[in-house]
Length: 88
Image (cartoon, rainbow, N blue to C red; front, side, top):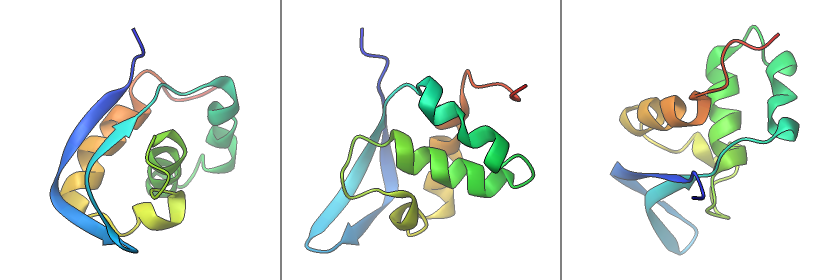
């Protein structure tokens, strides 16, 4: 079992020549969790960073995640942050 989870975008986005219609997020690793300290007091920035880091789509980097609609960021954030907890 890979642990990847996919969200179908309510509002697809076009990045370059490609339209992104779904986002698949992988499970976080220890290296991904290191950013919790950096973004401790900025929960929305943490959420966007984690979505970008965990996305299996090469087009969705943290910088381009900002292009997603808020109605898509919310469920993606829940997927990305699921199981992480509040950190140390």
